[in-house]
Amino acid sequence: MSDFPTKTIKSIKRLLLRQQREVEENLKEIEEDDPAKSPALAESSEPGTDSYIAETHTKTMVLGEQLKNASKNIKNALVKIRRGAYGKCEKCGKKIELLRLLVMPTAKYCVSCSKKT
Ligand SMILES: [Zn+2]
Image 1 (tube, rainbow, N blue to C red):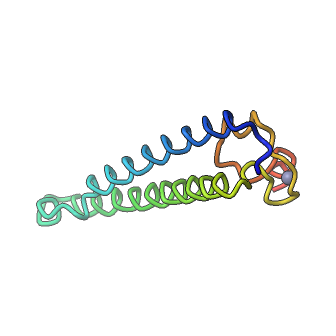
Image 2 (image 1 turned 135 degrees about the vertical axis):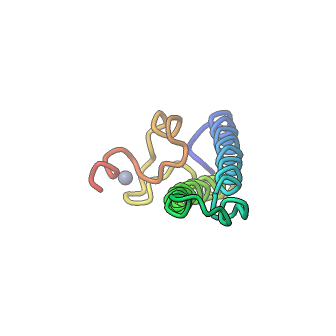
């Protein structure tokens, strides 16, 4: 059992699911926008196109990594909710402050542990 009231957990879960949807939508969008995947641009012989593609592609990769990371954290939090282990600091095992979880539902550490890292 989790230490938080069911109602609280439910709203956190809703928050996480909404974030997950947003992250997935963003991921799809940036992948579609990646010029390296656009044949028309890749075949263009305009000067500067290559560096534009390379630059944007790099940005897309970085952003994609961040989004994938966020998605992983959201999934982890959802798994923890299912197991009733949600809201426990992964470092000291203490309860994570509720306010912190409401602001950042994917938080893995309590405030004092996150300050130490
Ligand atoms: Zn801690």
